[in-house]
Amino acid sequence: NIWVASMEDWESRGGLTVFTPDGSRVFNSTNGLMARHILCMTEDRERNILIADRDAGFFIYKGDHFTSFPAPEYLPSNDVFTLAQDHTGKYWFGTGKGLSLYNPAMKEDARIKLSGFPQALEGTPINIICPDTEGHVWIATAGDEVYRYDINEKNFRYDLDLNASLRSLRIAA
Image 1 (cartoon, rainbow, N blue to C red):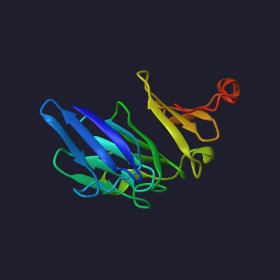
Image 2 (cartoon, helix red, strand yellow):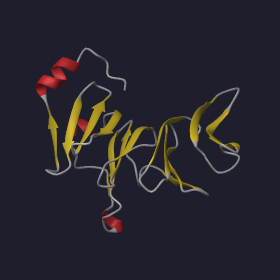
Image 3 (cartoon, helix red, strand yellow):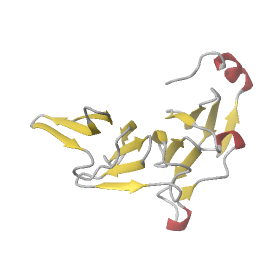
């Protein structure tokens, strides 16, 4: 299947279109998806579709329904720019007001982390989250700063040389 996101404007209701060998299906506010300005989506290890919306937060499509995860309970803000799942199964969310982490392996009351990150990742727009195959999660801010989280060591690293060489590039993707 191919999933395509569209923004709401005067021509479109926004939402998702899924193209399959049998045809296509549209998901938008008329049938349960309240996301109208989708900026990012991915498929997780359980084959759910994760959807980041500029205004409405985060959604999961589980094959027959959408579940919404809004701020402030799950996210620092509802403007979700990026999302990813790392190799341990944790979900990372980049919002206009910082980072959020969801760990489904933790007890229910400890699954969501909204604070305790480096100060530069709290209250700052996060544009990119990208796990690699070496056990790191790379995080880029709107201020063109890049951090590397080491999953095994459980720490964030800010590399001065790397960030100095990226400063003038205006990181976008």
